[in-house]
Length: 314
Image 1 (cartoon, rainbow, N blue to C red):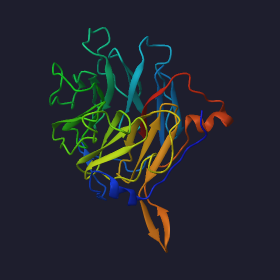
Image 2 (cartoon, rainbow, N blue to C red; image 1 turned 90 degrees about the vertical axis):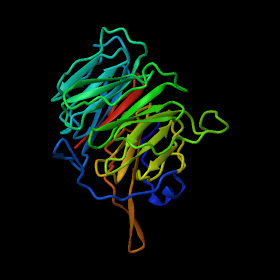
Image 3 (tube, rainbow, N blue to C red; image 1 turned 180 degrees about the horizontal axis):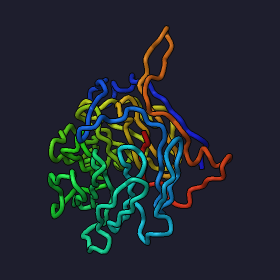
Image 4 (tube, one colour; image 1 turned 60 degrees about the vertical axis):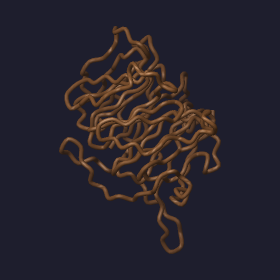
């Protein structure tokens, strides 16, 4: 169990990323509504269904003791007043103002569900399985294709929607990226002689909220940027060795920072910086509100099962 871990890195590290850096203006919209640009809290979800809320994130319930299958992911409503948890059998649990739109619970699946993504409008959600199958629930969750039935080089481990919800990316454990709808393919993690990435398996993908491009995190703490996705650093570049595998990554809504999350509940934050009077000043909005390891000594919080997902609250 580690102490609180925070890292803020200069955008100078972007020079070694695989994609170009883009400092785009805010104001992207989804389903006709402006995207809130400031995050004031976040929620971590554990495999046993437990949740840990920090900042203004609400504790509106969880699947702890309810599901007999591991929770694999979490997705929040646009206003942050609720969230969905997804289990490996396709069960979906809705809390707060998150509407329940159905699930795959009780359905015989070819492969386990590995992730959930919410429509930008909050009117529905997607589930993705390890074989690349994509399942839609609710309105405004258009289906753009899947990998179900195809032979993949590695299991699918994550999914990310494009900012307007008109496309999505699927991520393989080997770093392969599959683009559907208006999602633009911009590259994959480099591999040595066809083998796995030297930085560990790919674990999560995050679409840049202000344009085209995406970030991919690996279990060992590397972060790769593709397309015009803004890059601000990674645990490995900052000299941190994560105490547990990195399992999730999420952009701030304005694209000026992001969070990387460890399976032990540790949080790494990375922000844009600017030089003011020869002093480096943080200008990004990926703020730190606490972590599970960081709160152990003061609040007695512990992680009875690994953290598997992360979602923010505006």
